[in-house]
Image 1 (cartoon, rainbow over the protein chains, first blue to last red):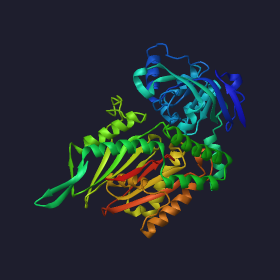
Image 2 (cartoon, chains in turn cyan, orange):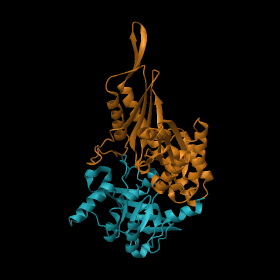
Image 3 (cartoon, one colour):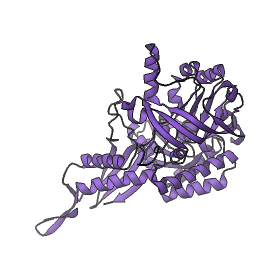
Image 4 (cartoon, one colour):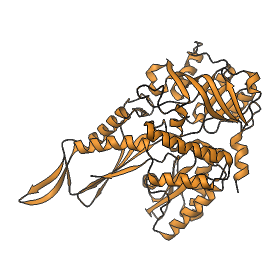
Length: 182
Length: 292
């Protein structure tokens, strides 16, 4: 089913998102990938504050190519989510409500999604030029020294994603394959 | 600047200046990241027609639209503009002047990735992980061949699919069935992570590193082409069918089109071994070749 949602996410909103739904997201989301997650994790271990508000937010696993003049961002598709699996459960327990990436997640992440009524979305991998058109604004908000891996605040409009793991733990990667495997 | 080196009135070497290398590498890095080759475009058209899953079809349509936007607006096809893998075949009658060849190739990569608004994805040390900020160094494979020209292939390689690639040191007794199992295992494990539809490069034989190089080279072979060796061609067709029956589909979200092609390259090997490498490439299978 096609659905339209706005950020921030709440349990009320994730309640209606089912594995396999095609969802258009509008609002603010944050980017973070390997190096930013490592830094956030180090901050948490030292009991320091995170550089962004996690509660109710969505993290997009993405590191863009540089923007040409007059554009908000360069190519901006998802990166493989499993590299963030080590850090995701902790962030979910802190209130993170959504993740956008591509590819499989561990059982620990799936359990943390269920525990927190959160959701894992996939964006189409390798469609970075197309997806960049839905990003209206991009601003580095933390870890500028990491270059493409810095944390960015994005304003997105009808950003297309697919619900892979919903709040009940249903996993589209597992269910959809069965239909077409011979 | 390309010229000739003459000794006693006879042309002995063709002279290629490093500035030509830099200029061409720079242009190829930019071109490869914005335009796919014709064989890949045809593969997409065919896949859209044949895909049975509605969501799979929708994803393939988006990927075609993505390619159109990339070319028209000069936005890289994928934000992961890769580590620059470069194959260089140097004719032994070529004299390179004006600098060091490897430095010139890296300078071309530096200029291409900086001036072409491509992502800098290379860290200078695998453990310390500080970004080199210009996407250098490239991974360069040299080969000396006969002739008086240089053939350069630039193949920027993204790591979503690179991370899912494998080397299997099989036993001779495992035979061709062992090879098939190895390829299917790698593809199954890769699933949605490698951004299917994939191109699967397979290297069989040689040594540990040789089979990996063969697999990488196989990815630069035209999609839709086949090996000249009869059993290898059969293997390519059979593996493609088996992979497409896994059900992984476009984006890993279910469907028929899990791979566009399986390209297999072979090499003689040792009596005690059967090395097999599977190098997986996502649907953004970038490679471009020029001859200087």
